[in-house]
Length: 132
Image (cartoon, rainbow, N blue to C red; front, top):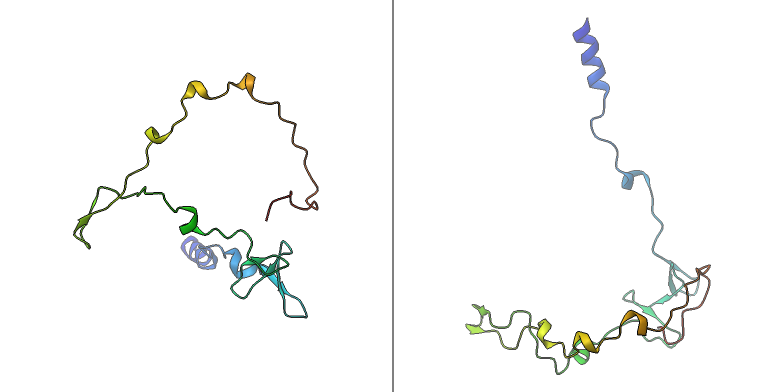
């Protein structure tokens, strides 16, 4: 009788909990206006590829990596042999010896300007000037 009761109890147990993604429906990360314009949850317009755009249609926050790194000859694999090319990787690995400012030239905490305390905002403020 005990074995039958234990068998009935174990058969009724579900060993794994049901995951949240089965029951919880998350809202879409953007909405579509009646005009067809897609707006994300932070009220930014989106282009066809899903990037945020400003009022003129320019992408916001895009960084042109080749232009930003132009003239920099550092290479994370410099000096290592690359078997697919049969050559050693060119360039140099960046190191702390590349720093030109000596610690004695840095200001001390007493020389630093006093900072104003940060006040929390309601979240309805526009971004600071120059922020895109």
